[in-house]
Image 1: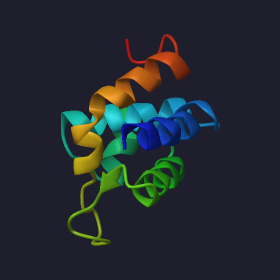
Image 2: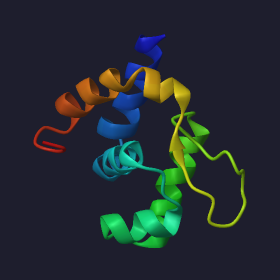
Image 3: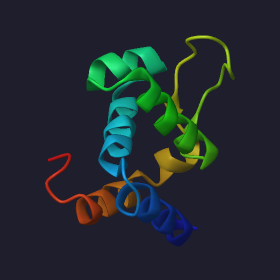
Length: 101
């Protein structure tokens, strides 16, 4: 299963534009849950950019939102990503050298 995650992360972090921002979002959410507005402020990114990345990460099963689509509900790392966080760190180091250090 970690091979599937590894391939997905290579695509999301190293294979597309915005990979560095997605890695920053994941790192920030690992520290504590945030909603889209809080992430926008914490990372200094446009709210619409944050929403785009969040939707992509939720769609691919890396983030969850226990309150569903409720306004301002926070995002969390999915249990799958939490359990395999070392794979994320490995891919980030290789796909985004110099990021997250």
